Amino acid sequence: MKELFEKETLAKLMLFSYIDNLDTDSFAVKDIEKQFDLTYFRANKLLGLLIEDFKTMELDDYFFISKNKSKYIYKKNCLDSINRLIWKYGRESYLFSLLDYFLKNGMNTKEIMENYSYYHYVSVSYSYVIKNKLEAFLEMHQMNFLVENVSESKLRIFLAQIYFYIFKNYENPFSAEEWTTAQAFIEELQELKVIEPIEKLKKTKLLYYCLVSFFRVENKQNSGDEVLLVSTDERYMEPIILSYRKFAENRDEVKTEDVITLINYLRVNHYLFQEKDSSLKKENDLMQLTRNLLTTVGIEQPDEKLNNQLYELLFKFSYYKDSLLDGHFYVILDFFFDGFGQEAERILQFLRNKETIAVIGNQAESQQLLLETLLLIINSQAYRNQKQAITITIDFTLGEEYNKYIANNIVHLPFVTLKVDNQYSAQTDIYLSDVLSEVVESEYLIWNSPPSSKDWKVFGNLVSKIYGMRNSL
Image (cartoon, rainbow, N blue to C red):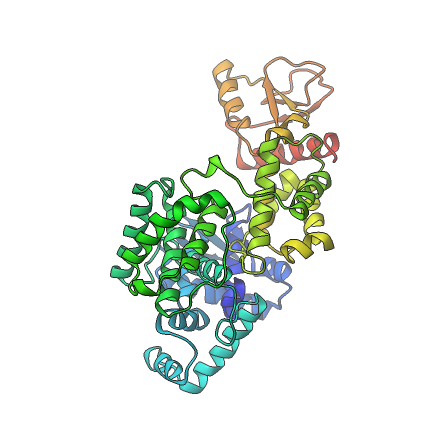
């Protein structure tokens, strides 16, 4: 995904992600030098370009960087995130604009290139430079549909991901009529009980997928030989064919294979209405891979739910092998590594394994797959069952209600299983108070009342330390 951005644009995105994740509001150019291994000149220039983009792209309503002597101060109002910057940069990407033009206007011809050059105000020669870069990007994912036939099932999700990761709900990159048609198609599928009621962002993903599919069919790029992943999904064929032909512009171009491709997409991505009534047929290599993952991470007694969730995730990456993009390439994972560093490292070890790569491709650099896998594991009952709770004893001078307030904040922290009480005992792991009234043998922290952000950070580090010592996998 990151290859869609020019080198300097990507550098600005990564710089913003770094600044946005700092523990403090202030930073210096030397911090950027160290983080990205840049010269002072390059780091200073990059920061200046980012600040200028905030102004020219009207982002300073959300993010603001100002200079204060030798330091810079970063402020935000928390009304938006780095996704707004990705949208602004993505919509200006020449690689994306040419990809978008090919999807909507037909295949690779001299006339198409000349028209693109005219409408995007670039020379014909430069449009071919862009095309060469675009083909290199597509080749990376074995998706170069400009020069060869590729799997339609993979290409459609590949293109839909690009639209979603750039635009999300910030802007509609299709015409109002096209967008309305896709919405009506999805609404009819819901009325026919083909798909479940879905939340907004998941619906947006499906909208982009349907729009990409409509354009591919319109340009006579139909799916090849496809079979249903689940035989009982045959029940969805007739209603979807009728709806597809109702809303597709060239209804006669819709083939049965296009409908099968759509049903399989709905199945793998959990949209189907009666999905729980049937499931994917278990494949031996993926079943073994699921067992390998659980063993590597150290889950001794996995339950059926976790087994199925991990199997389905690995199946998705196997089925769409090489075509799933890392939409979270910019995420700094320190938050997760601080709390679940051992688990994350074990997952990375699994992803680097040659047996894993043979089945799902090389996903060792995919932060999205790492996060999805980690979250499935740490949210599972099987994981919680084998983790020893860390006991926190809370005793502040402000009394019982204040103790409850702190306890309510602590138990919702996304670290590990925490147990809170108000009576110090031999089971206490951390004693938490605003005054040390007696000698304690456990770890202890003396906080301000109320606690500062630094107090919380020290607490989190201590919890992670105890967790790592006790629950070493």
